[in-house]
Figure 1 (cartoon, rainbow, N blue to C red):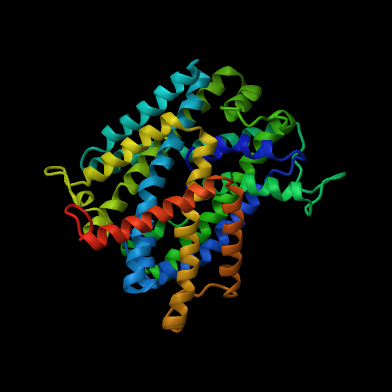
Figure 2: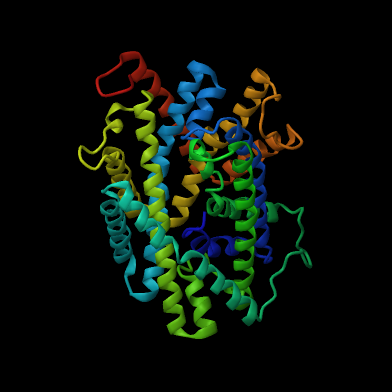
Length: 421
């Protein structure tokens, strides 16, 4: 869950709030994740299968509609996953520009080059990949704890939690800021459900999957809130702009000087590299699994003849991620990621859990969400609110879903060679 996200979205979020109440975007993001976690926990505990949403949709929506919904999930993943890759690569380039004066095109060259580098790192057997992953992720906790400790012990500015003066929780301006800011904070929370993608490998999934999800959200929410408080106690939030590319590096420079800022920047770059590595590894398996199941383009089911990994899926993901990293801005990439996932994945699963309860009842559920159907209703309303807050990217999300439906029916009707069988 902890990747480049919290470091690059911090200035986006703070700059949306003219009254300094930016912490509520992180709280709202955590509440969104918590409501959605009820749905993931019930589905993951009942159906501990590899593939997560892909299998949930297949089961919940029946044979005919389930294949369509599963296809749409893989379809949007094949487009959304490269956007996630691009966001990490662009964030990496922005923080690197603190160390080296890259300029606009220099940053684009770095972000594109990083995607290529990740591709070559992953173009090998999975056993080697595992060792690299452990080495990369070892710096995450060290970096975040250093940031939190530094800010709490050197803070000079107040971070507000309650409105003052003309500010109010019930103003349109506050909720507009919550909507725009939470689009970015929810992006930073994504990953709380990853255990569902490994459900078949979890011991006692009925208990351990829900525990994993809720503990992850609680722990990460606390971590993000402390990190925001720490940074903004040192950096005056009044002066934070949306285009501050390396806010945490500047924060460390104010406390300890240039040398410490360089060290924390290098650590953040390692975190960005680690998150990119894990994202590409995980997402490259989604189209492959669907194609092997006969519900996506057949070419994606191919494995490397000697190294036994889904090389076609990896190549397509990295090529698309390379293009997005060159053509798009970081803020737009993050917004597009959420806009594409809300309808098919998050709202789709909320509807799916209701359908499953109606069909099979609740007697055999290892985990029953609390206060049903309140979490489902709240989750759908929140996702619709965030979908609206993505602006015109919501139209792209709808358009891509419509195109996916058309593609599904065309390839199933004609059964063209190399497509769905």
